[in-house]
Length: 111
Image (tube, rainbow, N blue to C red; front, side, top):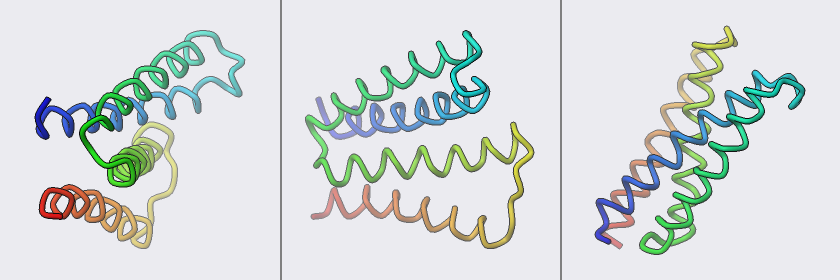
């Protein structure tokens, strides 16, 4: 597996993290079946893709990127899907997360 495939799997794992966290929010504390089932299934898939990606990406870099993709995506999902507040300060922090993930990719390849 090359680096492009590994990073693609890692991005996919991060996107699934957005899905499972959003489904968890919709599950009303795991009391609604379908959102709960979606959360469990997508969490398992997210972990599986992360595990495969970590065969070829350093664990610190991979885990930080996975969490960053998920955190930034869930913040956007919270704003779009759940009407959560999004301030200038939150948007600035979101940009920092995105820059951090991009930096891990760039410097991970160079280091």
